[in-house]
Amino acid sequence: MKAMRIALLGVLILLSTGLAAEEQRPPWLSDEVMAAAMAIGLTSEQMAPFRECVTDFLESYRDQARRLLRRGAAGLEGQIKRLRNSLAREMDGRMATFLTEDQMVRYEDYRKALLDSLERR
Image (tube, rainbow, N blue to C red; front, side, top):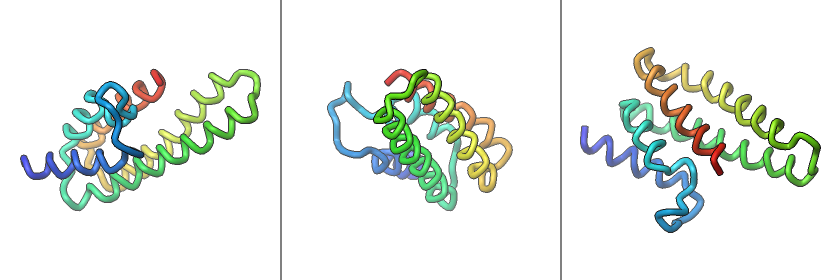
């Protein structure tokens, strides 16, 4: 179990775009998000698809939010929130294909922590 937690921690660290100072960690590497990810209890077979789903979510969010920012459209904050929620629902569907029902309950805690962390930034 300890080895799995260490492996998951490594996976989450790989998601970061670079090493940052402790107080400047990316939102997806906050203590709350990382603890929620470890609480899911992923098997070694589930780690790769989990990492892929989260990476796809984060990259899509970053790219689409940047486009919205460049356009400078009115109601930007609401548009970004809708984008974040839409992409999160897509991630939910992908996660449901390989997580157990029990893991999905814990994944919902992870999802909430991740979205809250992204919203604060």
